[in-house]
Image (tube, rainbow, N blue to C red; front, side, top):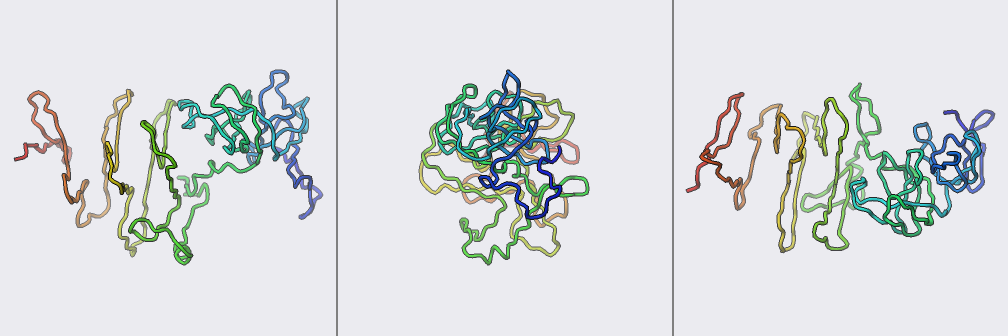
Length: 354
């Protein structure tokens, strides 16, 4: 993509534009994503526009200040201001499977990356399809087909949802795809304050959030600290799917840690009341797909040196049952727990408690 603002003949410090602090940009019509028009498929004055997708530009947004007669026309764009624009609602979980969701003043508005859409503004926020466009100054109906005319504060800002994946590495030469974070514990420790969590003292986190309810939950309503849904409709030839993956890597021979967790889960319920169920971890496996070669609630694979105590399962009993199972007999089969040892199937018998 050719540079639209050439530096030929310029020097460092030369001012290109001072009008409204440079909020007006001029771009060729062919670089713009805008609502579809059947008459000529070109941008019209007043259209919300997106530029820079798939190029070296950032994902810039604005409103066209003139109509185009050809794809080579130069179009002035206002990247700020308050405009009356057509905006669609959204769905509760960001996908078409969710419930219809209305929008209200102050909610963010996003513009679609896909060209040829009749309505390009919505409350949808999937970063693969939508880019931040601005903020609502009125209410929008929940419909995903019938847009609401509403005032929008346009504001060009980077899509932070595209930068959540920080610190990842490629497999070729371990070249960082984005910047890793080295946490300066000493500097944080010296700073005033500090987060105290339960009785564990100071806490340092790369990503941390606190979520509190402003109103009680209703029946069949859920609240999630982290909610991840993977949906695969492709004909894959292999590979792995993880809804969540955590890895703790310790690499220092002289280091001493009190604890090391791949995953740590804690539940704290400080008031008396009635709770139907309470789980540290709840696993539900279902679906009508193909039968996998192996299906397990838990898979434990260990390597490295044996410790003084090493087990695939450990429980410390304060009160109640350490391990409990309720088994319903099937015909005359003996109750037993199957276990493979060096490839040979054995069984641990289960007998009535006396």
